[in-house]
Image (cartoon, rainbow, N blue to C red; front, side, top):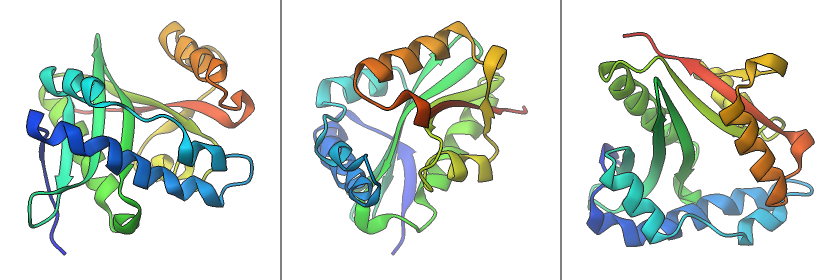
Length: 173
């Protein structure tokens, strides 16, 4: 099945919460994290904000139906990835890698120096996956104030802080 990556349009926004819910079902297999499958997701208004900023990409099937997306925000010379989701039945086909590659290529064109994200250290499709595509876990002083605030906020939301990490991928022009 063919998938293409493009910038997300406003007409896609209402379909994206369902993509994220489907993606989150993978957490049902993770001890202590099954609750994430039923937790809140980005709503349509949040997606529209990322789309308006031109920092939202979607993977679509041959019928132009979204099967995955990546939502990001620019912070100075860095791009922060807030969410990368691929529908459960489409996972394992390289769609997440393609979304990341497209995003980082466009970030390089825009002169950005790095991409950042926060994720689970021990979930196979989280930190281990991101490490395979060039992200490195940040420790101690490598975690800047912005990323520290994001990690603190995630703890407030109930995510287990000891299992979370911040990661950065340097972008070369």
